[in-house]
Length: 278
Image (cartoon, rainbow, N blue to C red; front, side, top):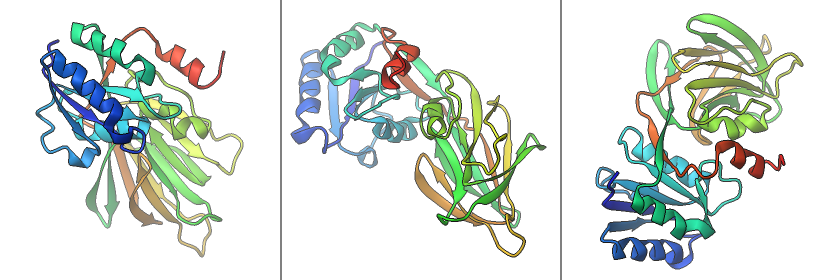
């Protein structure tokens, strides 16, 4: 696993004056590696140049990198400069130790799935992009719920009157899905979890479906004389507005993204530590 070109994606607010990214760059260059530093994912001019990406920041930074490098087979190493950091593999004090492991090839690459979505209006499909964590179909107004009908492979799964509904990847199961009461999935799994957000019923629970499922979510009408106004968000970013009668299709994306795993700290160790489950 020979890597020659390293791209460091840093957060200027957390990595003041590129102090840490500069140290990493100098250390790798001593070992005859080519290194570039960029401060935002939008500044990545040539994603095919890199053999590995080192992301300094939190889960949000890793998410942005994952979208840029999805389908390119370029592994991402996340270094936690944030708080929880479920997507980051190492904490900041272990950077040099980690770099030594990378240079020796002592790591594995874990392939992760992502989601694609499409909004259908009046029989016209409009792509709404890639989501690494989740798609959320939620209400626009603070005080009003929305009604959604969820179909799995054209079979009606359930109808939800709630603040919204989210569809998460295993990677995203520890994000909003977890806060909404959904289950945690191992990140390497191939599955989707469907979780209602604040449902207006005590018996509405999450459901895990196959990654090969095709989901259709229809926006209904909660009150007879009102239109349900909703919005679609992908990984927290506003993508589209929609209303009663609109349909969203969600399925597994063809492109995957790769994460570096050192193997010394398991997902369950990380989960216990970060969620204070000891």
